Image (cartoon, rainbow, N blue to C red; front, top):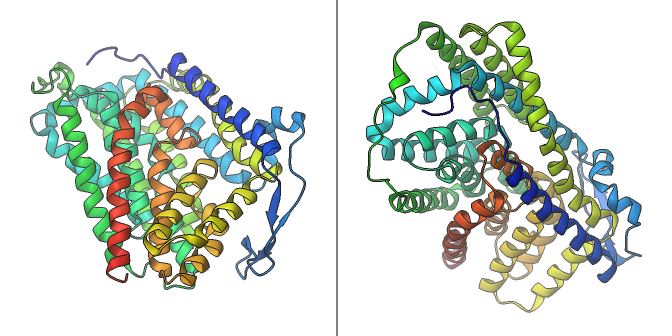
Length: 466
């Protein structure tokens, strides 16, 4: 493979493009706070201490707008807003990823690992594609992993290039797959688990439709990726075994340590599906285990402590500009909340649903969740905001809470890997050196096909009385 030991490199063009898109969204949101009347729902605290909308108290109009100084400083003010703990955790997570990946690259361990993988799986690469898509979808669907798999994305992207495909194929096999699994939500504790609890349903009940959705989405994604890769130049040529695949005892020892330690971290994340007390710490677990795996592997491969420290710091410096991008993306929700715009839009959407038929209503609920996911990427935070509104609305018109929650999960998950306001997507694109424009051009076709498929699944669920 080419460009050995180059180190972590974030494309300046990709970064500037993403910053420009997010800034335009910040400006548009700020303008809306003056054009749309302000409003807010009354809030209450439930038995578990979560803040939810008080549907009995209802909605009231309040003065809107936002001072200019708050708008211009919103990327920094968001650090002190409600829920900022998750944002800070994402930033720390990003810095760990940047430092470790640069150390792995500079040590030569990353290239050595990829050369061995290409040599081993080059002849059966489409089987490997099927396995990787299933693994990432399962991680999203069964344990609610999303941000936690970001450290694996650059590995899959580099592997994809080594196998004769391209970077967006690697993104599709990893981040797009985990987003699809997250949305299918077979046993996703952060969307299905929270939403069903809020709707007074047994946790993870009604699983059959979500399992059917998982299978249908898996084959749609796999077929889409195969169709895309078959049209790539030179895709019919099986990659030759990498010359650097000759065994190196030190590198092998480093790889073994990396795999074992990171594997323990993944097992702990998987265990969080059965051990609820771990669910709030999965991102911390992955960050700590990834850091430990990177340090142990690079030292075992022959890198000195001084070289490791230097490479780690350079990785931090390289990845640091992405923090501004994440803060700007997160500020959009802050602008809407402080400008009293968010609740007004929700109220208008709920009011518009009154005149719709059952099929149109369930699709409209799906649309509400899709739109709100642009501003609030956290599935559990969105559940506390929307479920108290959309479930009673659906029940009034004879639609079951179970189907309403499937629509919520669909609306929450798929667009996570399309909207430029999602921090995990921005991090992954930067690490993979894929511009947002290129990613959008590739993935919108899948998103359109998937929208038709999932809308059909919701209408099917309605028809059979799910």
